[in-house]
Length: 400
Picture 1 (tube, rainbow, N blue to C red):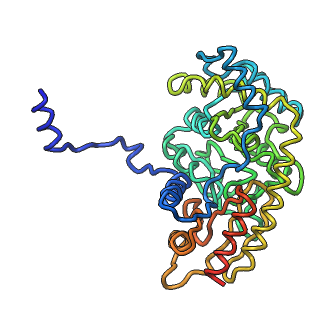
Picture 2: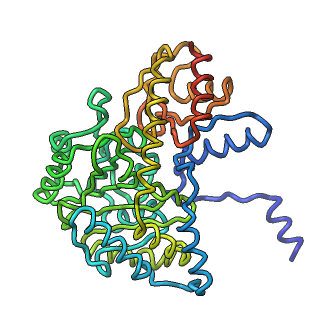
């Protein structure tokens, strides 16, 4: 038998992957993080502006809630859609902050991070032949999830001159009888754009009239620098699915707790799908998330204030570099500078630009091409001011 197996593997086999994954690639943000880690392991002093996660630790009182959960042996399976206490905490959050009323049992589901919530909602709603409107620039995962669902992506090109925001009129031009949904991500990754409240309301009203869904990814909901947070929660839930997460607001990226809130039929379909994939999210992390959502939220504002300070330094520093123009982002913790003025015979697109930055200056960024927009790069300022200043100094030296 051993000889037969040896012969089998030595001859080699042709592995044919399923079509749905054959053209699927690892997320660019994760790929660049791997590259940065490899360089750092070799002793290279890398300034990492690539990965999008807060550099603050998870607050101690949230970690203590996890300790208490373990001490109480809350280590077994939970309901597929999450423990009642966390579903209630999510529903209470939307009521407290926006006056929205969600039935915690029927209209809220807890997921393994916001990414799973988005995956589940797309598989619950979209079929082959459906069209999904997606503003460009977009988070790198959105096109891949649409593709996996079988639907077709219809890009809505937003303009730098308008702060990469959009209007209901922009959306209306792209609606067809096949339109099944639109994905809105504000504050936006990668641009930091924020949608005006009145335009969001108009889009939701239009969606009701034209019978399509609004998927509102509000992962960066609290990261707004010039005004209050914008959510789809106040505008009804008949055709709106809210996707949220503990990852950014509470610096809990590794805990993998997200949620969705919306129409009961959609939420139930998402929970059914989850029951056949991951089952429940991590039980300990769920209890930590309860603490995060129900505690005094004042510490969140302190974090936002620090990111505002960093944002101002980053944008000012980038705009001092010849050939780079950077608009002031209104939210999230990303800058999305236009670097096309630095292109030349050896740097012809965003991919070549970020590789040049990495190889010549040890500065990690993400190519705008990954977000659907050449001529730009994404830079995360979720890192210390010391590293921000060091990175800017290197960029200025390289192109100054």
